[in-house]
Image 1: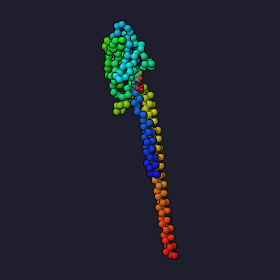
Image 2 (image 1 turned 90 degrees about the vertical axis):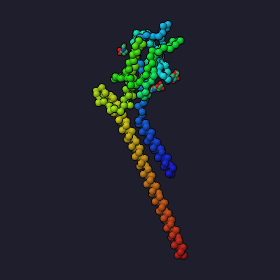
Image 3 (image 1 turned 180 degrees about the horizontal axis):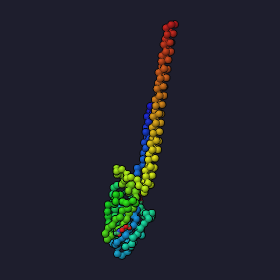
Length: 229
Ligand SMILES: *[C@@H]1O[C@H](CO)[C@@H](O)[C@H](O)[C@H]1NC(C)=O
Ligand SMILES: *[C@@H]1O[C@H](CO)[C@@H](O)[C@H](O)[C@H]1NC(C)=O
Ligand SMILES: *[C@@H]1O[C@H](CO)[C@@H](O)[C@H](O)[C@H]1NC(C)=O
């Protein structure tokens, strides 16, 4: 009985823990980086059209299939088959670069530290201009969240344009409130169940005690009878 009670305690703690954890899904879902526009000022390839690709250290190459000519601004919607370029899961920078390949060799347009904190403005844009090489604009709206999540500073006052994110905050609050309520109900239920169990146990012990007493009485009665006989 005690053993089953203990496993009951464990089960309840475990369930509460699961509920609490599932209520607070980490905001780390990955901030996706897309290429918004690029203009090449020169290529390193003389014989054929260049194959331009983007790559972060330790990740796969992303070939930019349409980028072939210099002095042309290529703009993208961010939904192309080869997008996104990469993603950030935390504040940490990545070492990334823009390269060009042909049969014999790889050339580097540029290699740089790509950081979530580089992205700014309302939409999370980052323009990288490398003189005589290229001008590229990257988008990462979620990088702004990523950075603000890690800042301890209080949120700025709500302006009209920020009502939307305010609603999002409200939504999170509601979810947290519901989770707290569920957790409270589970804990109250558990405490109630435990109290009930203790009460029953006490009653059972009392009953056993009384029974023992009665048996004792009976025995005494019998003894008394025997003495009388
Ligand atoms: C982030 O990128 C990694 C590797 O590039 C990938 O495995 C993961 O699924 C991506 N996550 C998101 C949320 O896009
Ligand atoms: C890289 O590409 C290979 C083959 O295309 C694929 O199996 C692998 O999952 C990719 N890795 C990442 C991190 O995207
Ligand atoms: C680089 O590209 C961005 C986005 O297209 C543009 O706003 C900016 O003026 C360009 N800079 C130069 C020097 O061409």
